[in-house]
Image 1 (spheres, rainbow, N blue to C red):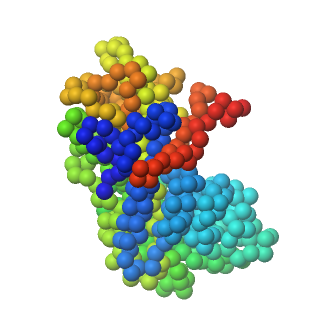
Image 2: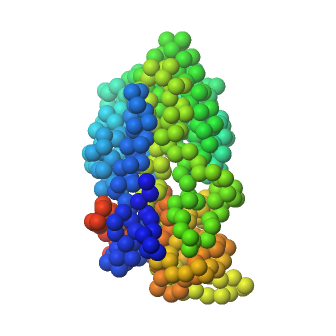
Image 3: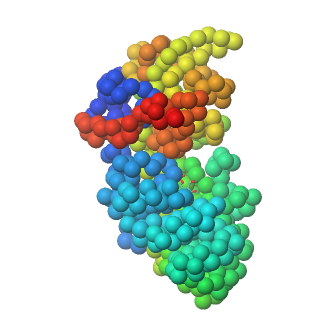
Length: 429
Ligand SMILES: Cc1ncc(COP(=O)(O)O)c(C=O)c1O
């Protein structure tokens, strides 16, 4: 059930009107629904049924420690890609035996930190990294649980910048070389081979590439078993997509460009994460391994909205611009990945619409949230919600142009609380 909804003509997060929240906390502002996060996590967890599994939330999607604590309480694990994320995951309370550490470019000090903290699996992405991990483990006199990240050469059919499982991408070891890499790793001191890993990309909206990747991983597990290397877990990565086009529906909203592939749209809503899980369960069960799944976006994307205020509107060069107080320093996805986010007024006033560019205050033409987008007519001081912004929103913010990062608010029913203060000028120096 969606927790950002219109009641009459006013947009709510759970039981609180967003207008009240921004009046109290200002803009730009990230607002999250606690119950949406919990529902999303529980649906994924439940989809595994009796199969041994661990849902390791990918911190990169959103690493606000209060959101992480919600997932810790649910029994989730964590997938981390740096010393900083491992530190945060431990601070939030994820048990170390539920933490998998990936990362194509781990520094030696990061490897040492992960070993000393005893992560459940260090996911290694090259043969050279295997050798370095072994050397560091010997120096520390520790045994390290290892998974090799395979590159299955499967096209996730997503934006090239978030495609990670094609052989031309920098990630993992070529599918064809994985067996040899395990044989080699078996000979290296202080490594314990526990699992195998793949992650082909993010915002996957069709079953097929995901199923193909899992099938290739399962065949590797079987080949390894035949070669005398028995693994205990299979990590199928994350990457399942969310519906960016149909988060909000109302008679007074222009029909969204839901079916346009140019904006990442699909003719029907893409499958949800639990359906992706169900699509691969039977294939995975044959291995007898514990399944690790690493969703990020599917847990938090639709649980977050970036709220911004209209500063100015202007007609220029045959276009209408709506200039808002959030910029690409607050949400870079439209500019970086051509990503589509619905943009909606917090209060719907009438049927009149205009085609506009929604742009931010940053000194770059790439600072936009929507181009040539039909939007209900808005004026200075109106508020707009940029929907489905809970994943790769705040986690990709910056201080570019000397701008301060926004505050983050968590809503639970009728209550809301600040889970990160807005930055102040002191944070810039
Ligand atoms: C190794 C790994 N696992 C999981 C994820 C999470 O992806 P998503 O947020 O699309 O589920 C990513 C995202 O880049 C990743 O690189």
